[in-house]
Image (cartoon, rainbow, N blue to C red; front, side, top):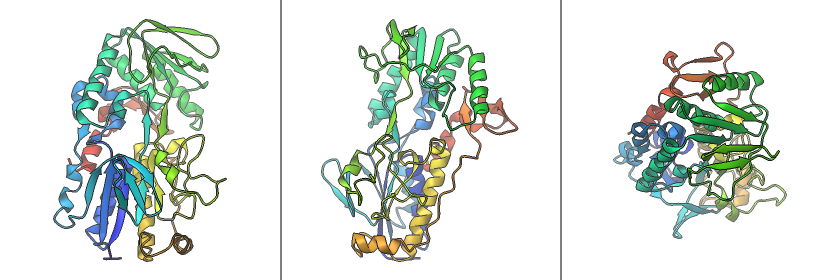
Length: 405
């Protein structure tokens, strides 16, 4: 326990970041009254990306997806007015401070990076302004409504979910789902899970093209959905006619800001070259022991694909704060009290907890409002009415509660 002043920065205002902020504020209201929590997020608002596919077919749902961050610190304003929200884009991370767009430097003792990933083919997820985001969303809904034949590229949870949402809303549209692997979803999920998903998708009248790599069409800007008759080619030469192509494969972590943080060993980079993810230890600290006070949680870190879900991001954030608390109890104030070498040596002696994977927990993929496919042994698929919350509102109610909306 400590009442000394400790500055914690959380970068990213989605599931992992908001969970970390709530955990830290709770600590500041109790035994750690000296905690100063700052959330840095480039968006002016929380955008519920978990429900992005529902918002593309349901305008009323989309209106609820934009939530202010003001409620996040509301309850703590009187008890600890030092907590704050900084609306800015992170540009550089240094050993004891960060820099945001415009040049402002913000010091820290502890840093939690939760910047997530951004699907480049979903224009709405790239907008940082509320008004611009809503306008883009409407243009995307208009494109879906006016199209007759849609090709979805990518058979992951997002591609499957969006395809099924549109199939329910527009049953007469020709829908094609192409995936480069021989089975849907990730290769590290069970074959039965993929087979059950494939069966239900086909029953909805969706054509599946598996084991085919779709080539990018340079004639069109894939980040803006253009409705026009076109023929898309695959690597094998197959021709697929359609009038709208929706890519759901391209999501890369935002980690450019890590370039300013030097690794101890150049042969062991802080960021994985292939995936763009931040390399972490089981404690969710950076893999480089030189930076024991920096954690990476959620989609931005190097945990396997099965951990790239909102529920896992929440658990990771709680785990990171728990390990941070262990360091706080040992009086590791990295910003001003220790040199980087001293800090690394001292923190190496701390008994840090390893994150327990959620790979064996239930995996659920939405198939529209009324169906889901589940990885549980006893339930291959079920109705949303029987208790599945993902299809009813894609956890929007949980997001509202998390943000104290």
